[in-house]
Length: 453
Ligand code: 5GP
Ligand code: MG
Image (cartoon, rainbow, N blue to C red; front, side, top):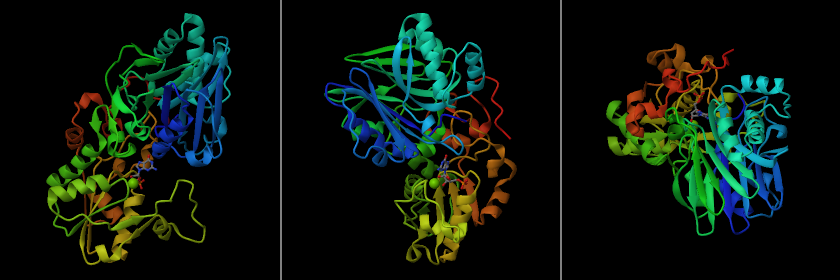
């Protein structure tokens, strides 16, 4: 897997310098990627700065001129990090140069890379983003028109891609024909903006115009011009609503906060429990816990405190075992939970490690009972479109039934939302959603790359 789900892209066309706005936009989408950050602007050529770490670290003391520009924050897994694969990626070719930022993952990157190598292409990185960029460049030269080149490239790309491209003095937004990953257009007095999430529009004082449509190519300069390829079907990733996106974002017209709250309400309706207090696994379980508490009339309480500064780069000292190590990230509030029957709400269970550790921790601090309620239906199938879940072996729900999962996690009871409940909470027709990691129904009907090892 190369390009990763949890990336964010941002692009802006303005009549004022844009560097600060790109910085704030990326900062507001830091949750989508903490590995590296990059910004490219256009003066009479492309200026770029990218570095490892959080946005605030990567851009310390940096400023780029220009009234048109774009940025990217990147998340990656072991083996593919490093600055060589960081974004935006700049391509220089006979048709000029452009910068591209990508959120998503191609499923035919191996085939495309081999095909293109046979035709003489060389690759400097291992990312599928470079495949997309080189394909666009090739097709541009063949077609004699940049947007036509993008369309020709899109006809060959299979998988998820929300792209922001900086070409000359234009920003171009592209969303794959299934609209798997979010991408939204906004506007302020001086600027037109494109971003992965609407929270980035809020951060720069812009208003939502609309989401980029499936298969759409939007060219932004003084005006917005739209073109498109045919959309096969919509397949919005359900996990954006359940976990990834910020709860204050609105994706494809739907407020993430309301969906998470509803997921909690439905759990209270369908999986009630006689308890004293509703506790969230922070931060991902909080919105649903509020929904559960309101619907059940059981009070919500902060049973667990999360260290705000805990990041992906945190390395546990070797002398501390992992069970104790969890307390560096999360610590129970004893006075709130001791002697009480708890409903513990989280968004999802992958391997089950988080839930297991937290249940034990809550019991160690005196919880009388711990009833686990999970908003996402059981995750069972690998994601080929960029979510970091690639092997069957990773899923506790693949081989175990509910009772076995309950035992392994050590809970008094455990219940998940059903797939129907998830669809009810999101409020979109089932065939507009990608639910592949739940039911194995992959929306892109191609031979899947074999990633299971
Ligand atoms: P588990 O411990 O069961 O393997 O993972 C479940 C926990 O990880 C939940 O608390 C959930 O919020 C979180 N989670 C789910 N998907 C992801 C992901 O893709 N990345 C990260 N960092 N956390 C995730
Ligand atoms: Mg979590």
